[in-house]
Image (cartoon, rainbow, N blue to C red; front, side, top):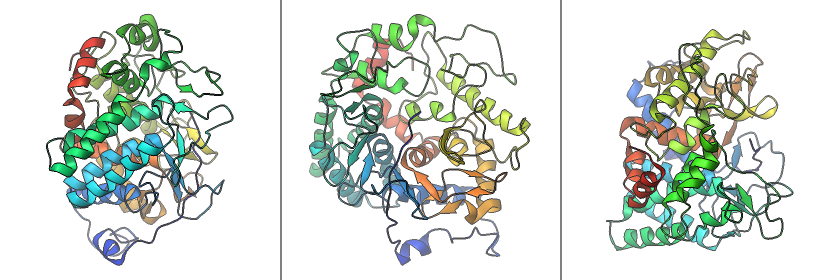
Length: 449
């Protein structure tokens, strides 16, 4: 798991926005009766959406990698944006339009600004880097050897771009023009180049000077499924099905043939490095913001049941709380990658540091609606302003260690807005799955959906 670093400046929130949204302290602390579940649901969506609106990098309109309310940053790089987080933000902006948090015209203007930026930003065989300078579009190396294209982050970005294309393709002239520009960006991604000379697997990174030095083949199972779906779906640079079956699925070894169950739940797939409980919960979120898992099956898994079981295992672990941490239970659960008492960690039952990450439960709403609602109510009504700020719930907290950092990460905030909307209306699932190229790609890989 990569560690993301960026310094941001807190934008001023307008007086009208503050009146429209929640008070800084939760309603019970303010002496007001509880709002309804539906009102809380909308409130959390709207506040979290603002990360990608008021909190966006001002020149590019793209998603800043992180935001620290306390201005405590490891580096002075407030203008750095993230490609994957921007993809999630594109989808969040569509939710904002649908929910009338912003007007359609405002949304089109913002999305156009982002597309303007993406067109001029550095790309490597059509693939965007993980980090870019939002003012210039130039790559900011993620590490000493990671200064080129990032295929997985690009897949998250393209997933969002395709949803935007589908949303506006039949709109007015301005909207159709935006959709056409997005289509050109999509067609320019050279997924086949990232086969590293025609190998039957995709590689995460490539750069002109470092070449393939990162040497990171994408093999399942983790968060990268969407990369293979899009690579197979490309109308211009498609990869053959063998890359999926031999590379990603490891020639079938990705499938979990064991009958072992955890808490009565079986995982169809062997999670990389986490065979017992499954990996961090974002593995059941990132690829499925647009890719609809509800009827999705292939020879390896029933992806709906797999994601539900992955979430329930994570939930039951927190309820049982084998390490005895404070404030773990039926209304306080969710282990996934994010900020931690150790700055950043890939939290999971296998790496449990006593830190709850709100995106884990909130982005799981489609899989565990009742458990996720109970968690959201506890986070808001009971913990309140300890973990709730200008852009919704902070990235992580630990009651056990009295650790409440007012920090946000784009790649954790985005799935909250999107998956909560998928639970409500299926909006992003419907948009992404309406792409004819995606349908052809899924057919090619042997999926039913």
